[in-house]
Image (cartoon, rainbow, N blue to C red):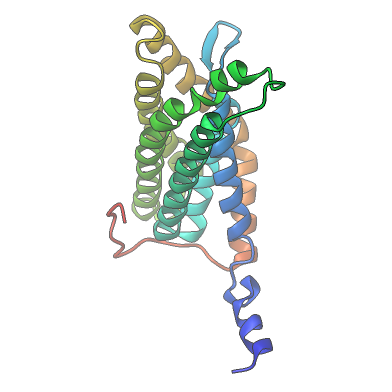
Length: 232
């Protein structure tokens, strides 16, 4: 087999999945950004929530698109890739923080305060992310079959409510237990879920448009009949 033929065969276009890598990269990037932003707690009007809510809904929206267009098996694969990337980021932060530094470097305490806390945030995020995203994809996939592909808006919001609700509960308690009071933790959970859902509702017209555009241009609209829903 010639090299040119092999290269042509490896092009995404030849597989008919021209945009899968873009959606996957958006998913993983928003996930990593959220892990770092979530160190900070922000106030939005009367709501207090981790700053990760700015980008984390993008990961769930991307997850909805992955499951709706490409199917549960591909979405599950990307979820695992995201989990590995979170772990790698956390380990590299710990290594970078532990490495020796010259006397003129005067920001070690500030650096440690940020990246030293990230592994705890990431630990909470990894567990919460995997459970939330997995459940989000599962609900999205099942509802599509039950509803025969109708009412994308309903399964997108329903799956996100379930997935993001579980994610917020697990993440907040692992990342912030012992730092804030239990009452404050529940405020963070409630505020986080409410803000994320408002975010998703506002973004729903764009999400629906992108989903329809991808289905048309990829020539793919997956229905997960006879698909196993195991974690691997």
